[in-house]
Image 1 (cartoon, rainbow, N blue to C red):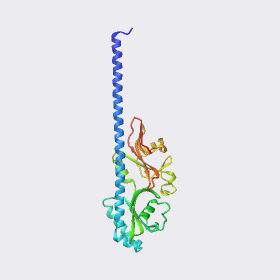
Image 2: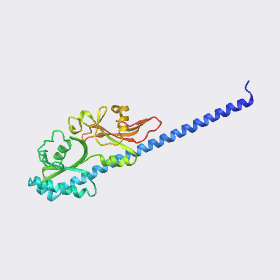
Image 3: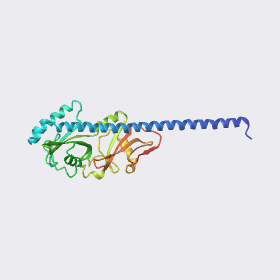
Length: 284
């Protein structure tokens, strides 16, 4: 029979085990809450930063669209002078926003008139695959969105109006690098992923790195995290959410064009690993 000392020892061991388990469970729950809160905050921050990028691009496009000197040279079809004015505007802006924006002007038929990065290129027909340009021409109102072109980026477009007639448009383009740099400073890596079915349009992304059926649209530094994305079933991701396991901690939300067509995902991954498994997904 078990004597009193042995019984007491067993009880002490049992109680110690229960207390230890409770502490472990509570500690795990607290860690889970911290991870969830951090990811939710990161997703909110990324969304807000993205909207701020859009607002800046749209403001710049609208300013250019009403710039008398620029419009006069455009109306007179002086490409060389128009190009010089654009370069001057960009130089002035780069004093506070270094190498952030590119500019493209289109004629009334939505063909390329001039590009800030390539003076020689003109006359390229854009109407068939640039939904934003068509929208601006039809409504005569400015527009900003994440839009699919030869690349996936933020495009802000303002109409050029003369005597209430649409005569062209001006577009300010910005990539995702500013957003990526800010998130990286806070311990996160940004991945902008485009469904590869759109590569027939986004031809400049053809040789970019891929994650399963998605192509990477932005520059990254942490390639180990990129490789970790291979373990995620991206096709099954919802509208937004997060996933945390022993390899990766990430949050994500969907990217849509102006017609509410799903283009891919923005993924924000933590630059560290965590010993737990969590998943939360929002509705599509």
